[in-house]
Image (cartoon, rainbow, N blue to C red; front, side, top):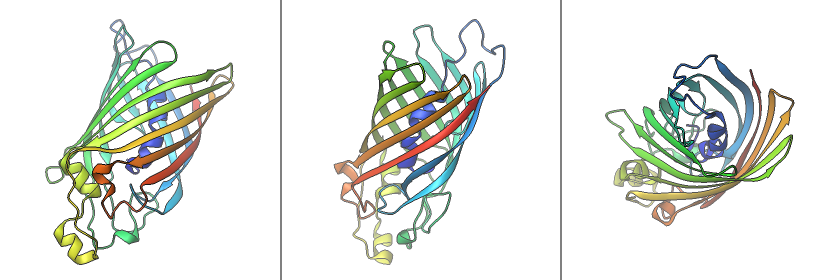
Length: 263
């Protein structure tokens, strides 16, 4: 996870890479499918930051039948039922958050004294259900496996295809994000000890919805194998966490562009 907000802007790519998985008549598939490329991601330094930066991000997806490895979901198993329902279960890594600036991990010097949110291997579950040719709904849950940092985040989303052409497709996305108390407190809470060190006001967060997001994604096909992707998103932090001093900007805008090759 780059940050929760930055990972949000990659969700469209995650669903895109989650191509139809293995059916009952071909668990192991008959060939390896690979997509790779690179992108530029612009967004807050961490979830709630009022500072932003642009970073390069890799795009990678290798799959055969029920097996896959990719840069948005980690490594795991996938399956697609006859009604179109896509399921995947994978192991991923949550980078946590630092209390200093970083070019590749969430964090900012403004968080000095807050301590770090420890990273952890996670188990990630994703469901995607098409509803006709132009609409799908999805759900995702990610649970941190580190014994000292158990936390759960979840997402419910919807995607509608606004335009479908020979070379261009456009999508509208909407997501609701939430977490258990441990997740919300880790990323948005300010404990008494942290307040004493930093001068921030103590803030305790309960479980529940922490953000809403909406965006537009454009895909352009450069022939049969090359694909260009541009996406912009807006996020608003929910009332449950918006009172935290960690949230320096309640409304955030972010986006990315990427170029991929599939063979």
